Length: 289
Image 1: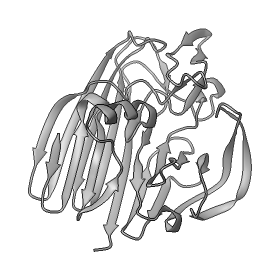
Image 2: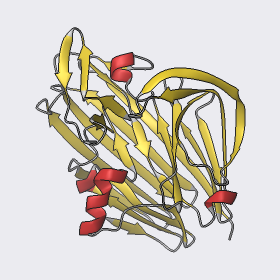
Image 3: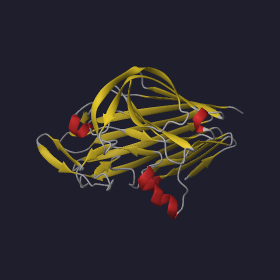
Image 4: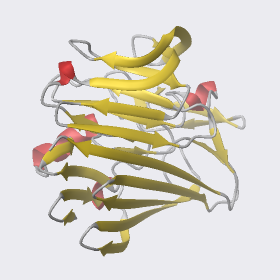
C-alpha cells in the first residue's frame, strides 16, 4: 500500500504485520525499511524493520515461559541463540479496514484476529493498527482486545530504523539512569544504574542496549532531519537502541517493557477478558529543507 502527496511518501505492508516500510518527508528518508523484493522479505525476518511487536518484545530464552503455573513453549525463531524473539504478529497478514486520504493527511486502519491457536500463546485476541499520517508527522495507535475467556500476559513494542547519512555525527536525546545487563545470548540478567543520561553522541559506538526511561520520550537528530517520539506506558517504558553493521540507520525502539518480561515479570502487563489496551506512539519531525 503506497500513500503519497507532494511532501510525503509512505508504504505500509499488510502482509508483514501491517508494518511501515517507507516514510519519506520532503524527499528525505526517515524510516529505513526493506526493499520489497524476495531478498528484502528474507531480510525482514532477521531485521524486523518497523515491526510492531506483540505479545512480547525482545528475546525469551528457549521460547519458554510460565503463566499462572502453566508452562508455554513459543517458536524459537532466533535459532543461533535459541530464543523466541519480537513477538508473534510481525509476519501475520492484516486486513485493511479503512483507508482514507486527503491532500494533506491519510488514515489507514488494519486488523488481525487470532483464534487462540498460535503456538505458545493459546489466547484469543484482536489487533488493530491505526496510522494517522500528515505533513507534521506520524501517529500510530495500536489496540489489542482480549476476546477470549481467560487473561493473558502481554507487552508492546515498535522496531523502526531511522536513516542517517552520517550516523556518527547524529545525536540521541532521552532521560534514563538505568539500563539492562545481558548475558551471552542477549537475555537480560540484571538492571544496572548509570549516570543520568540526556544526550548520546553516537560517534563510532555500537549499541544493542535497553535503557529504562524516566520519561517516555526519545529524540533523534541528524544533519537532514530531527524527530521527537513519545509513547504511553502504564509502567516505566524502555527504549532499545541497536546499530546494524551497515551503520546507515539506527533502531530506536519504544517498548512497554524490557526483553524476557514473560519470565521476569518486570513491567509485564495483563489483559483480562473483554478488556482492551491502547498503545499510542507520536512521531513529530522537522526536516532541514
